[in-house]
Amino acid sequence: MSNVAEEFGIPVVHAELVRDRTLPFRRLTTKEDIVNILHEMLDRSPTEQFITIYLHDTVIVGIERTAIGQSGRVAVGMPEIFRGAILAGATHIVVGHNHLNNYPTPSDPDIDITDIMVRASMLMGIELIDHIIVSPDGTHYSMIDHLAELEVRVKDLLARDMIKALEWDIKKYRMLPGLDLNKKLSNPTSKLMFDIQDKLDFNLDFFDKKI
Image (cartoon, rainbow, N blue to C red; front, side, top):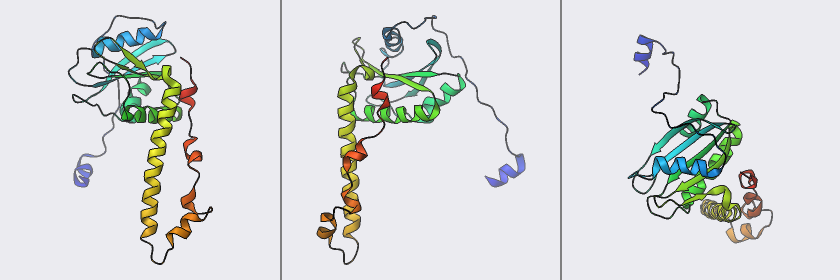
């Protein structure tokens, strides 16, 4: 690879958005406008897909089919989600994906990716307005409409992850020669006895938003 680079030099590139097709123009006045767009794009899909809608204030400046998955799941990363938003000059995004059954309630991975998107959006300065899941029977699930429920589920997921991390720490300590693990665990100043609640008090700004 280095020999090729030396022979041909460093490529100078640019990134741009390419228009695939055009949907009828519509100005957003209610959440249902976005829900209808997602149903229009996803209801007939044989696979799960992830859509990112780019907005400048309340005007849609672009819609991207960010990822196409399999029959039961779709994987997407932050670069894919925010790359187009940056190129489109978006100030806000709404993301959505479909469940192939008529059960749009989010799975644990759906909640995990939403939490990651919230953190990324705050770093990028591009506000995540909502994550909406649609099903082919015309139903949908808006994350922003279920804040209290999601806050509990997110904390449960974090508690589960923290417990796994704690178990891993304990395993590492067990491998240390000459360590009295019981004495170590009973010591309130031990690094193992961290306050899980502090770990759970992460930034929940997303769950304080109102659409």
